[in-house]
Length: 158
Image (tube, rainbow, N blue to C red):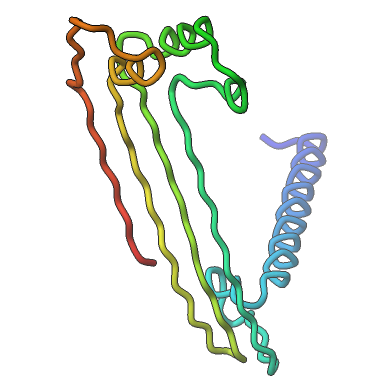
C-alpha cells in the first residue's frame, strides 16, 4: 500500500531519474555535434560539414612494452650490478617484447571522405640465455639454450 509519504518519495525519485536522463542525453547530443570533419565518419557521417575546404589528416601512434627492463635503465651506463638486476627481473623465463602501431591517412572534400590505415602488432620472446649473452658475453665451454625463442606479428590494412 502506498501512503502519502511514500508517494512524495516516489515522485521525487522519479523526477530525479528523469532529470538525470535528460541531462545525460543533452550532454551526449552536445558531444556528437563537436565531432566533425573526417572524425565524423566513425560516429555519424551526417555530421560531416559540407564546406568547400579540403581536409587532410595524417596520424600515427606506436607502443612498445616488455616484462623485465625498467625505464630507469634507459640512457644510462649499465654496470654489472644493473645487468644482474635485469637478468633477475627476467627470472627463469624469457624476455617478452610486445609492440603495437597504427598509422593512417584521411582526406575529405565536402561530404566525401577517403581514409586508409595500417595497423600492426607483434610479440617476441627472447630466452634468458640470449639476453645474458648480450649483457655479459658468452663464457667459453658453457652451453646456452635458445629454446623458447618465438616471434609473431600481424600487419593489416584498415
